Amino acid sequence: MHYRTDYCAAQLNEAPQVLHIGDLRLHYQAYACRSHDTRPPVLLLGGAFQSFRSFAAEVSELLGEHPVILLDLPSQGGNLQLVPDLSLEQLADLIAAFAEELNLPPLMPIGLSYGSALAALFAARHPERCARVLLAGITAFGRPGARLLLQEGLALLAEGRCEAFAHGALTGLLNPLRLEQTGVAPVFRKALLRQIQRLSAADIERYRQNSQRLLDFQGFHAHPSCPTLVLAGEYDHFTQPWEHAHFAAACAQASCALIHNADHLAQFEQRDACASLYNPFLRGDALPSRSPGSSLLSNPQLLHLEKRHEPRLPPSQRQARLQHAEGGEWAVEISELGFFGGLLQADLPAIRGTRGWQLRCKDLPAQPLLPLRQDQNGLAFVFPHSDQQASKALESQFQPQQALPTAACA
Image (cartoon, rainbow, N blue to C red):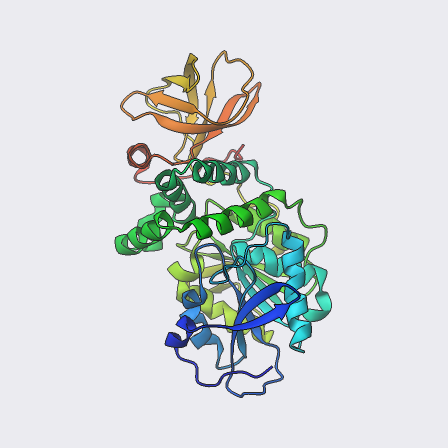
């Protein structure tokens, strides 16, 4: 591997190097302090809506101690090649093929969101090629509510409802109830919303294929055996802290750090807190139980974190109406209501299909909802937040935040 030694952030906008493996194209940039550096390189793998430019600060922070490689696999980042037939596992195997082709020493991937799944699978499937791995936004993609929201997003895109998709996606990435704590500036939130609203047809197809890969993924049959650090934003609703902790508990040598005042974009919202853990972990230093902006979970805590991620409280007005677009309306009683979902009681027929439902509550616009589970306890549901005005009105009902109840989330 020949590394560039003249790194500056502007170079992340330049055309990448391209490695051809069969018909597949892998885009990368590689930097180090020396052009020929035999130390294990850090490999940066981004998530949806991210590009090499997203990692300007990380590259600067890491280059003092490690070579750094930024990699876009097909359909990731700036790599526009579509690979609808490749699974997550096959894409993770491409990382190993990349390392073999360039004769790299064992890698140290940092995977964020979608990139965390690829990094974790690479570490688990190719342990000889992975020295250690750092993951943020990782789950086994099995939580029913998260899967339902992904499916709804794909359905909205298929219908051409890009505005509705963008509002729902943004709510998953940036928890609107915690903007004050996470410090997300309105200008950043608006910029990200515009970016999602303006996805090109090619971007939408890449997003569709990548999301379908997550939905098709059957779970981790093996977990990383190398040293592993999992970073969880304490207010992350899309990939919740307890899911990060469960993943860490399944790894052979994992630690899980809770990043305070952060949600799914922890590495950008609380950059200093995350960065303070990067180099110590990559060096192999013992991590402190507490450091500025984060707390390390103890091993006994990993499987016992509270699963309920938001207050679910009896609303002031319990009586409401449940409607379906194809006809049908039922009187319901809301027993629990939160910003992200709730539980209602009613004499309902067996629910078939998740789309076309609305909840009509007094003093609130009609709220689109997705039925999640119907049993003797009632109908559990999640809000897709695809209607901006309805979502904003609902948000106003949950400010300021109240303490979480002790009951576990459905």
